[in-house]
Image (cartoon, rainbow, N blue to C red; front, side):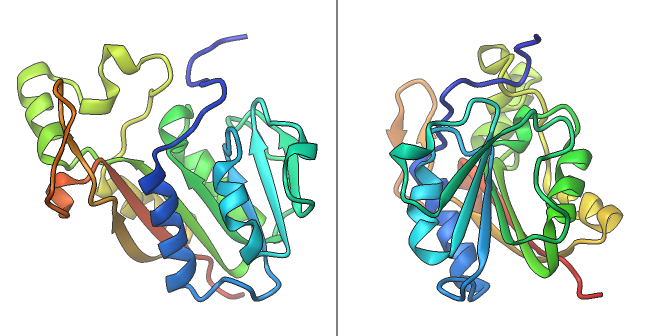
Length: 215
């Protein structure tokens, strides 16, 4: 089986979990008896963080952890995200995915599946490396590769996306774009010095929150 896009025991940076929690707060989705899905949840750190906020959380991953290591309301499902997901249509209130869409072969299929499993009026939240950051632009200028899609990031990272891609795919799939999120966290390449500025230009990741229209 091809290893392209796969990342065993994946874990996204802590700031992506903060972005996800911000999106839940802005949608007023916490503690409403809702169901959430953590797509490509890896070790399950995001699922654990949001478990107190939802009745049930479904963690989907190519190599999901054992359920007995989680709170009782987290359920795991094995899936190849490049194919149809093992969730019923219109069944999830809040569908989240942190730093996963860059691993899949077809981001349009990925967002179509997110919309399919979300209920009408539900929410879809995605983060991915920010190809609009200053360091990514400089990297592309001098190396002809996006910062987190260089040879050293392959074969895990295979699909770079821009804001315009999310806008276009949202229109194509019928998702209403509500808000952008920025990690506000970045480091100088090579020396890994954390920068004190919180801005779009110095954000390692970008996030987008959609809503599924009613009806």
